[in-house]
Length: 196
Length: 186
Image 1: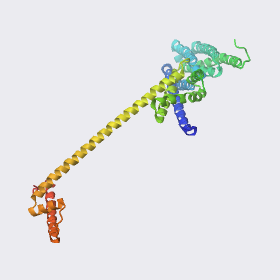
Image 2 (image 1 turned 60 degrees about the vertical axis):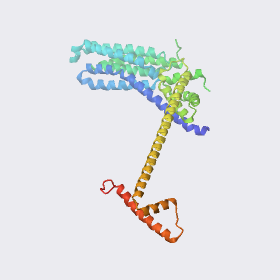
Image 3 (image 1 turned 30 degrees about the vertical axis):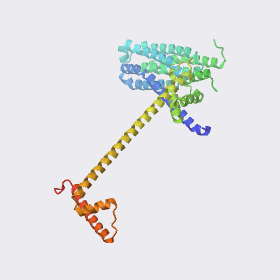
């Protein structure tokens, strides 16, 4: 068989295998993203009635982001464990605030006493964990971006159950740790600062 | 030519979602897998089917790949399995088609037997019908069947007339006979 005759067959085979590979990755990513659904369900169950739409939207975006990261693979996929653990921490902090301060949160008064500090602390802690995890990656930027986004969405979903102040506090605290940490990691990758 | 170690590294990247490594892995593995399949199936088209099925399975299950394992060994094991499956399917198909052929020839023989039986029945009927003819008409039919040609013109004309009458009689007899609801049928 000549090379010219073999080429269409080879291209067709390659195309078929590539499609099967992408489909398999998409299926597997879908299975991974379904693990987030229980957290979304808990957030929806605990959310104040007027916040349910926001929580549902955040949950939907979180599921889609997990699917996208897992399907994309490489650093984006490797960021999933850190992102999901971070998201669970921030989500847990916000939800615990909801449980502890049931009465005050229902009335809207006194939330800042517990919820906002809890969300801010969780955000700072998760930011630190994200930087530490990304420090081990060869290409830290996509790793930080993915895990920080997932953590922020998970936390925001929990904090949004109560109010935007908690979500905002969490995001500010996370950014305060992530920005200098991220800059330091990028400088290290570029060789500006020595690797420890 | 990609070495087995390089191939393992490239496949680990594919398993991690690195699309850039897909082409080199496919290019290195497909010809080897195709060669294994061709040796087992002994047929170009079947070998290609088996090789494609092997590659599809290999890449679909790439997430199961453990770094350090030989991807070439894995691919060849899958190729042997797929090629044997294709070969077995072909054997079953050809066995089925030969049994279909045997069945068809049996049916043909059955049909031939039916025809023979019908011919035999027709001969018997013809004998009965001829027996119903008058003696002169019977003689005319027998002379025609034996190929007898009278030497004189008058004899030939008489025989032709007797034969035509016999044929009319026979046609009427068969018409009655083949119409079972007719009460006049014998």
